[in-house]
Length: 240
Image (cartoon, rainbow, N blue to C red; front, side):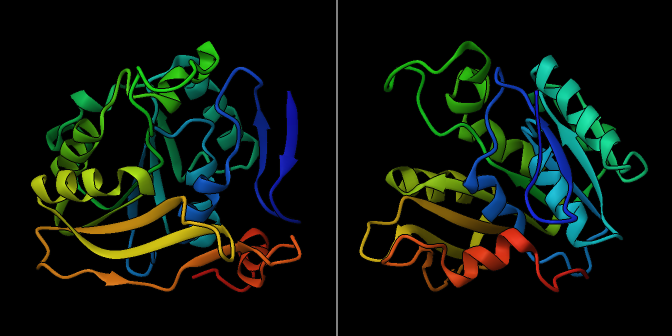
């Protein structure tokens, strides 16, 4: 098992070679939504717990429920929560998000997710331990949107990262689940490259109207990290 930290003094994580690796998409999503006024959040499809740990590191007032279907990934998330001393604020549920209901879980002010991106029949099959994280085998975008809509109160926010190649599908699906897209930010690997993923923030039963924010460029023309990328990975002066 590999043990590492994203930034000096940041949360330490154990990453299993059999699980979905730590990816930039989750790191970017962890810094995308505002946490002001949010007391309780959920991470649907939490994997190793990286996204929830970033959110909890940004706000000491935040409690996060991590929902993960895969038993091995849920156990890894629990170990990561424990190693960072966050058992009092982060709770891991080894559950199928399609079964979750507000009567059981309560309401959340914010839900986040880095969901599976690909149809099961698209491209090469990932390693067995990563199939559910990468392909829509056990959770479709429709399943995810329906769950978020059930667990959010009116005005609650849902933030996710999704590939630009399927952006039209995402916007239609989210709107159909009463999750109105309010913020949209595209991400480019470097200046001049086509955007690869989109960061989307929705509001439950929000009014129509989306704010398209400046593109996030990860690399400078010379291949070095952009100023914003360095800030995100260092988490400078962001605690609420």
